[in-house]
Image (cartoon, rainbow, N blue to C red; front, top):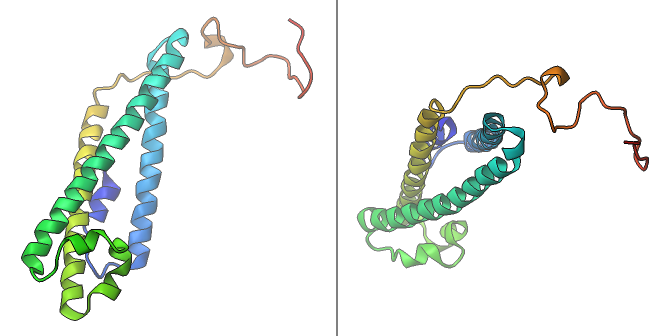
Length: 178
């Protein structure tokens, strides 16, 4: 949520260092939160339910990613069209979605029109990241509802049925006698 909030502050003149740094922060936050939810699910269930719990978390992470990428794309496209009609009514919004998209704006437009199109783009992008900010904020609030459990990693407190952590070391290609 923090990185999405920082990205929402972008404007047309934001330095490359900031937009690269904010995206790195966003990627790290998404990675840590994704792994944390898997660990939390595994800690909350017994050893026989670890596989289904992990699969369920991964399923919902994947499906929510698919839904929210689509939602963010819709927000971006609709906001871009709306802003173009307000800021640069002489520009056909359909030109912005074809012909290379944002990569070719400098070739399609010049002067004040280019500046207006860039303002519309950044405004639409901020709206899409505002959706990510809202979802991240809700996830943060819901995280307080999760069960808090201490995870013991020593072999003495290990549940039955899991392989022992103090077993004999087996070299690659060798088999351990039962």
